[in-house]
Image 1 (cartoon, helix red, strand yellow):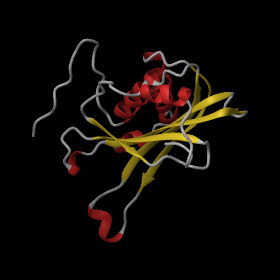
Image 2 (spheres, one colour; image 1 turned 90 degrees about the vertical axis):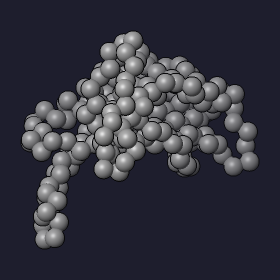
Image 3 (cartoon, helix red, strand yellow; image 1 turned 45 degrees about the vertical axis):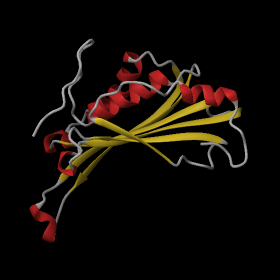
Image 4 (cartoon, helix red, strand yellow; image 1 turned 135 degrees about the vertical axis):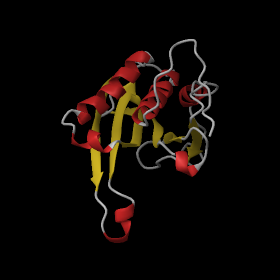
Length: 191
C-alpha cells in the first residue's frame, strides 16, 4: 500500500477512504492484492472476479483496479494520482471476428467513466482480442474468444469512488452482465 517504512500522506489516505463502503454488483467479488511497487511510492491494487454464484463453472470475467500516487507527481500523468484498470472476459465466438470489437470495448470504458461522472484526463489504453484455437487433446474444449480492456488515466479529484464504480461497470459489462436500471436491486441467480 505504501513505501516501506513510510507513513502514507493524508492526500493518499483520503483517496483510499473514498473507495470504501460502495455497493457494487453482487456478482463482482473484490479482493485487495499486493500493488505494483516500482511505479509509484504509494499504491493500492484490487482484483475483481465476475461470478454470480462463486462456483468456478460460473466464472464470467475478471479485472484489476490500481491506484498509484506520487506526492511529487509524474510528468506523464499530469498529476499526483494515476488509475490503471484491466477488464477481461470470454466472448461468444462470433464476436471475435467483429471488426468493431476494439471500438466497442473502448466505448464500454468511456461510457462507464461518463455514467459514473468520473472526471479524468490523459486517458490511454488498449483493447485486445484473443482468439484461441485448440488442438490435440484440447479439441474437445473448443476455441475461445476473449476481450481485454487495459487503460489508465489521471483523475481530476481525490475522490476515487466514481473511478472504482466505472471500473466495476466496465468489468461487469465486458463479462456480459446486463445493465441494472437506477433504483433496481440485482437479484442473485439461482442454480
